[in-house]
Length: 260
Image (cartoon, rainbow, N blue to C red; front, top):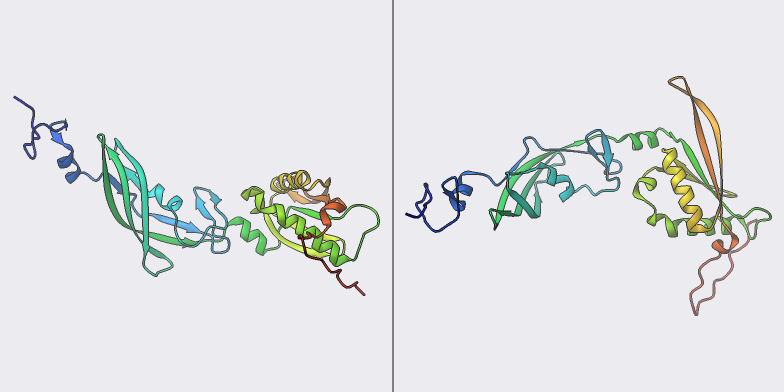
């Protein structure tokens, strides 16, 4: 006598503990949602709080798969293959989500649909708090070559900034997120950062990318927990060849008027 599903009576189908897959999924949620889902977002930079750390500075206000996937709880034996979310509602503090989830269970491909709400909390991340308070731990000075300066100060600043902006997007996100504010100076630019390790890595990376000379100089800033705290200045001197404006074929770049 062949085995049959104890719920629907079908035979000739795979069974586990006497129940076919169709009957099992009718009484068990293949994917459930974590209770009281919440996303903490920095209103200044868009970073998300994960545990005790903040990640994803520059993220958009809309929730992404990275925000929502941690809330999905697959049943044992269920493998999530693909997820698509649709976000509804207009509240800044409560988002309505509808998800279509492609899963594999007991050798079969299935789709699961879930609906849930996510509460949004806005808290300023430590990096933005430091920026708003003018806090910094290090400075990257962007300068031209040593010796007599060619051209006027505006030409120098434009050449330096053009070289910096050309390669900065390629730097690691965690280094760029430490950038706080910048100041134009007669001799170049000063970039203030809130993390010394990130500043050191960014300065050394810029040295290689821009063919610059790099010098480091720490200065005593104060004491914390009984230990001396230093601020570090990283000076990048770019070669004159990196300061020339880009000339496109067929175009002539007119000289800037001299500063008075």
